[in-house]
Length: 213
Ligand code: GRF
Image 1 (cartoon, rainbow, N blue to C red):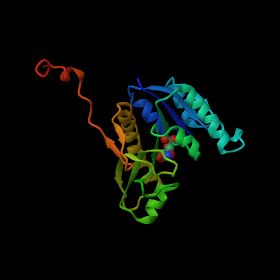
Image 2: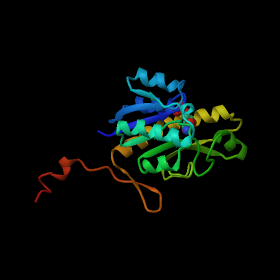
Image 3: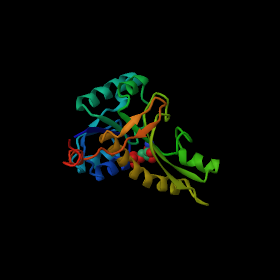
Image 4: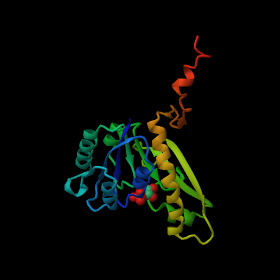
């Protein structure tokens, strides 16, 4: 069974959706950089181990990332899942987890990288908005796209209403992306896109007497 580590900074609703999906994976731990992250209590309620690596305790980004990597590596996860983890990671850390570090971003990338995506979508007048799960690469919010979900932008939408509509989709697509990863179905192509490989046939059908020479 594949092992995952989930990194959070706040309320942890995506983390909660991942736990609630009851994926056939081991959740090694939930790690937060904020001692007060609401998601920590949710993880504990689910019986998941929690760790805090408080970024305030480190002199700089590199020192924090080194401490974070030490915590993560001790868990030996197959996949590291950023779920509302609000720290920019150093290139070293991103490189260390290349191909096994994913993030969810509240926009249809490559549109609206960075912060305040819902406000910016409303300001731009787009009629469709959404969310993206992507592999993390050094360039912020630019890695290979695994899955996206779109929602309509409705007349009179507030930032909160739009955010809530997008969040509902985040909770649906993040568990799906993790399931695909853990089933070894994601392949990053040389062009930097993600190919979803077909589901592996059950061994029973491969060995069915009719096909067995
Ligand atoms: C989500 O909108 C996610 O896309 C973004 O940060 C937010 C985290 O929310 N990266 P939560 O902590 O998962 O509730």
